[in-house]
Amino acid sequence: MSGTVVFIADSLDNAYKFQQVLSTFDVEVAAGSTVQIPKLLATGVPHDLIVFEARGSALPRIEEIAALAEDRACPLLVIIDLSQIDKLKLPATVSADFVVHGAGQEECLARVRRLLGGGESAPHTELISVDDMVINLATYQVSVSGEPIDFTYLEYALLSFLVRHAGHAFSRDALLQHVWGFDYYGGSRTVDVHVRRIRAKLGPELAQRLETVRGVGYLWSA
Image 1 (spheres, rainbow, N blue to C red):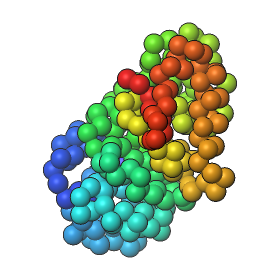
Image 2 (cartoon, helix red, strand yellow):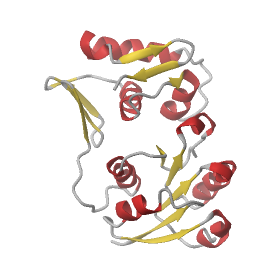
Image 3 (cartoon, rainbow, N blue to C red):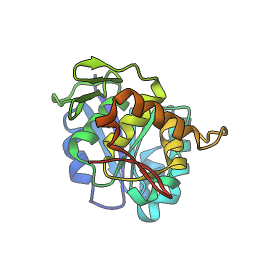
Image 4 (cartoon, rainbow, N blue to C red):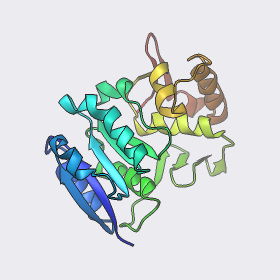
């Protein structure tokens, strides 16, 4: 079944990449700049996904786009610079995700596939392998040396987020926002608790990769 994807960007940086990604799905693509948002997201016109490049002068419009996505009950994928992640707030009532500017085509395709609900696409792996660990992005499962690890959802979400952004340090507040998905009022130290549990379940060798960055937060060592 065909669908419609709206791609909004003020630069050509991601246009070619997402043209290739979206061409693997049975969708029609309506593309334009932020100036064309009223036309692209006209009231009463259904869409299956909005892809919004929230970079540069477009970053302040993320709340507007998120509100439009919620109003239309439409999934949202945001492209954002790594340095701006702390400013990103995704809508809570619709499926939403983000990719960092410069992310590989395979990661972008995996995000789009999930938000489109598993539509038909060219075969791409949804497995991430690190040493003896395998993370299955499709089934939300983790195994080490072939043995499944009993992670809670939030432990899995935190681990997979850090692994997918290996080599980048994130503050506790940023991790709360992008893993927990809302402003957690219990305090940012809950991240420390989950990190300790993850390390214990991974074992000493893999646990060394989940590094503490003093004065910042945590990163997964590449």
